[in-house]
Image (cartoon, rainbow, N blue to C red; front, side, top):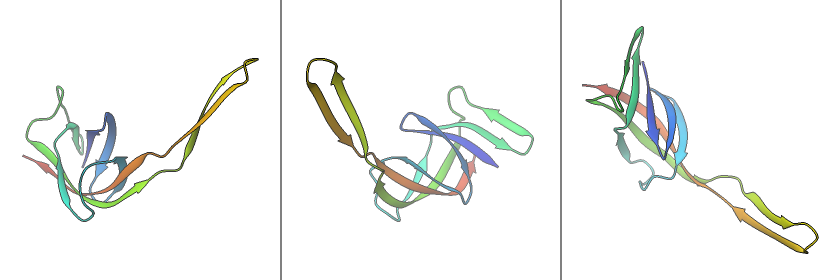
Length: 104
């Protein structure tokens, strides 16, 4: 059984026992959270697609860690004008482990 959930404007495939990273969520490490934006639920051959979400279904997950990703550099440059600017950015992430998919 798996579900497609939405968090931070992106979609993720959630299976019990698996972990993945999403954009930073305001929870502490070790806290159990419930994600309610389930877009699709698949149980064997039976697939339920939400319009836009599947009613009565939620995903319970545990926050494993809060961390920051690798630094990326963004350049602005205008030729022949001696204009160059460099800016760095590090995105914050939350790693989640899926505990169970609750289909009501």
